Image (cartoon, rainbow, N blue to C red; front, side, top):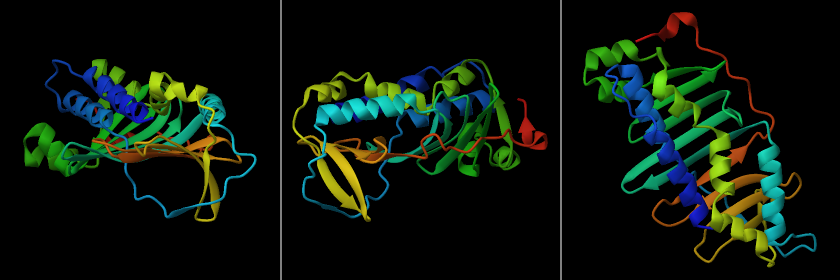
Length: 255
């Protein structure tokens, strides 16, 4: 199962690679940076305390659980994904909420000490960053101050890269991974844990990587990643994500 989270990260890296362009404008360079930051993202938020509970008769096999999770995740219309991961010496975080296909969403990426936000509304993409992000992009502290609190329209190849960053792209990376797909043939049963009073089904491999599933809804809850890219990615608000609105016109810049 370790290969599946790795594939997820690699797919996001690949999406970021699509963002390189010859444009010198802050809008395009920052869009490229935003999507490349997202590429590394997956996530360790602090794990809740969990205690193993006795196996229940209704526990599915890992193969059955994989099939259930795949079906419910790919059928979802919207959701919320958060996470943090350590990639080398760098810590990266990602927060995406919106439609699974990415047509209406808010994505926030933090890499190092800078943060960037990308809004997707009606096939338009708006990018905003904090002072540290804009200083890195422009090399000018005064220009960075002007851009903070504003949204820059993203277009061209950068827009394509941003459009490819979505909950759907993360799910596709997971469920097209051959190693994760191998779970479909595993007949051993999953573990049931009690986490803050809630039962959770957990499928794990010897390395310690895990998939957490809500037994009642059969929805994916979390992926725990071990190894060099240790972290965790949490899934929530399936089919209940809030609608994202475009930023006020007075805050939008076209560069």
